[in-house]
Image (cartoon, rainbow, N blue to C red; front, side, top):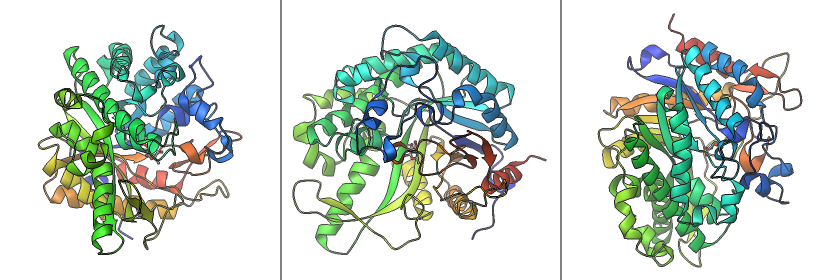
Length: 443
Ligand code: FCB
């Protein structure tokens, strides 16, 4: 295992943080939030482990003060959090839930009081149900709905935010949710996926431009990546891996930074994209101030017979996390450097998520999560390698502060550096938390 690095091993202005998202920790049943597509997806048999939902989650809605204390005491500089669209606008548009907006106002003030920089994400996956009824991301009007929601949030919080991201993980929002069907709304339809791809990008670009016009600064977006390699050296596997890489790693980045979709994507999606999609590409490629990279794993891909994209995920031979995800730290270095070199030239790059699920056990008041410590050390070394290559990586935000609602896996997969007992809701910092707190201490 790599020796655990400390703050001194990184540039002076490098920022360390933790990431969470609203639906995964807040307790969506509290505070008059409206229904979201995750509530109904979870209530449908077979979609989520134990049909668990985010109604209570970690009850961060009431315990946020203690949780912010944990972030401060862990010596983190940044808290990457998200606002829930349906908590702010229970119908998705129209009347504001004052209690919800007040809650985020207090949360942001609570960060500033503790010397923590607030890094907002506007959409981390919970589409309000009334908008899902209208087609959600499949409906072109979502660009306007999302921009109106961004306006409500940033006009209230914007004077105190350190950064604002539009969308978390475009691939999951569009592809995992409308083509693979593993996330809400659980669709498996190429036309639905093509429209979701294009509209989530259009919503991003429209909102980013509007926010800039009304004075929001430090605007970015968060993309997820999986290092991709073919299972064999056959031409068919090579093509499959190229298609996977194009859909996963290049489609959203290419649109957001160059205003174009990769040819390998158009080969399959062009007939299903909305009419005159080309006219939107300039809006989609809105100027940004930074680019967020979420990275967890690599994927070995082989050829699947049948229609495009002819991809099948196969099992690689590296050690795996509790998610079954292979551990491949060099993939993080690869993407940091590639994103900067080929897309976000000249912009600061942040690792906005990185971490692992482990079968953590609380014994004698401690959690000895040594595998997670090794994972973090190895990925921080990959960040250092990217910086040594001349890539302007300016921060690293660990996923996640707390064990939380891991979407289709319910409460089964623990990603936290702080253990949560989901009966008592008691928080117990794990060994990884203490390791990071020591490494990040300025004393
Ligand atoms: C990312 C998501 C985050 C969490 C981690 C494990 O894809 O952004 O909410 O689920 O994976």
